[in-house]
Length: 408
Image (cartoon, rainbow, N blue to C red; front, side):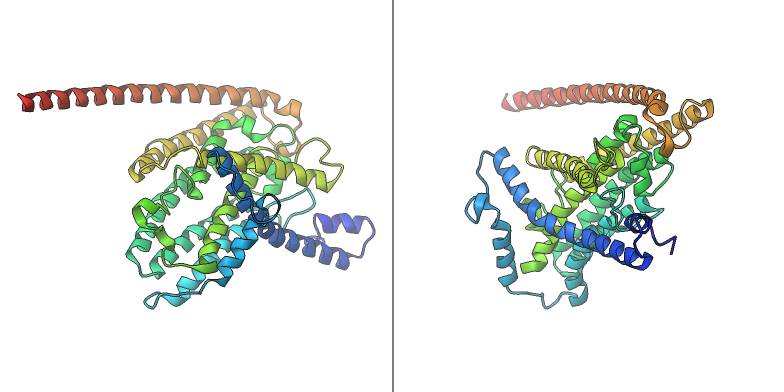
């Protein structure tokens, strides 16, 4: 019982409650949070995304159904529920119908390891970070299954793009994820948050956060990486044969996945629920986590509605020629610097018990290392840009000579 009774259960037992009742209440609260929060959040996120996109594009957005258009999502839900449930004759019926469910479940299951407050979380897995990577990969598998089971060439092309895009960007994402795991000395999401009591990991390794942010944007298939549903090239991508709520579940999973990534980045790099007065009330801690996740989420919406879609060759070249080598180099430098500082006694060996004063020398050194890496990186990019410009000017001059020669 002692091993099973943790978090809220342990707090209730220490307050004098019956251990059996405390464990039941703890499990009930965990299940309600894990299942209820994502399902309610996705309804709000659809409205928020429409409003943000409208403001960026100088439009009004939803404003007819309900006050401020808040009921528009419910109207769309009723419309999707009323549509005919169609399954193509030549499709693999089992896989075809299972793909939307797996797609949405793969996002909801991530919330199992999300600690909302120091006392409210689904389960504190010792391999929480690894669990997140494994479960998130199910979303990629669901999209591939949807394209294959539809027995449609356009859907299959969309599924092929998943292999090329999402699987590729998982590589730098995992390397960036290893940075907070290494700094905390644990893969438990709860330990990673508690290890940031002294200083947030985004300060210790801002480059890892930037890599994780870019990779997560690609993992969700958002602009400028939205090649999975490139309407101008693939009609509607992998979901061309889906309609009604099956079609809606893919998009509900996408909306929720973007916000989930914002929450995960808040946990991994911004201290999760840590903030002023978080220890006074679980509601304050929950509000801090929600605020940090929402700010990161809004930046992804801003990016999506600002930049255009890139070509697939550009995106793949950016990943394998730039992002992957950068993530590997960042991890090697970070691990080497951390180990050397620990051996010299500059960095604490246990971040969970370290205060701000204990982490301050490590923070300064890590920041300087990241600044040097960024400066070197910008120098390489500047050099490549100049080479590309000279090559473009030379090609333009060659074409001009050829055109003038043809005119003569």
